[in-house]
Length: 279
DNA sequence: CCCCAGGCGGTTG
DNA sequence: CAACCGCCTGGG
Image 1: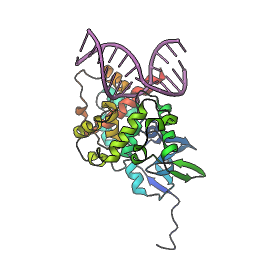
Image 2: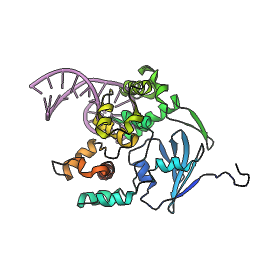
Image 3: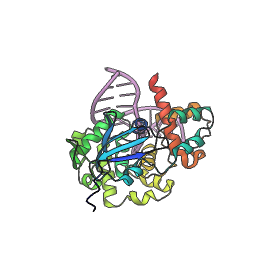
Image 4: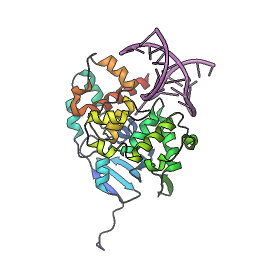
């Protein structure tokens, strides 16, 4: 410990790759970030944080230790998105989608939070998903004091495993409450090892996750892409179905994108959804 | 009132 | 196999 080096107030990380904070937080991959003063504020990895991006510099101040490595990993800064995007921009439709989604990055989110959040997402709209997730965190997460406010971490599976569906009544998750608890129990007991699955191959992870109640192809692929960080997962929801039907050959398989499939999915999804909303 | 919203699981033809 | 339907809840 040196006496002359003041503790940094926060992080300043210069970025030269694709990076658009609004697209990253609004493209539907995460549910706990909200706009604040030209940037975003929220909670990830047990840290409340305020984040902004201006003039090519990512500025972060968090409630814990401002560990640059943690946030570099979260924003996937070790991967060059510009070059992957360039490779995906083939054919008119994919070129448009990739251009439109330029700046999206796939966040490396916590495994359990990602799985649980996408269980909640099924047959639901984003404002309501965010509401349910926030109520879940307020009720069962740990308090975090930050910027004069109280924030809450995402509750660990152990915390939820002992609950009964009635205990989640006020969360207003509806029929998904039972799914949340049974998934929490599977993770908490070690029956489902998310850490191990992260180093497994895609098909192994898919089969294991689909063994959970209330987890089918869509939810499993989201958890694999965003939580297990397996890059070739390809979640197909109603928007993706429509886009694939209208703009791809009937014999399309996501494997044709290889390890860039997950990012391709994000570009297609973000593009299709924005077009659908504009109508 | 109806319908839909980033599904899943069980049943039926 | 495909098609259908109920499930909780909230918003348009």
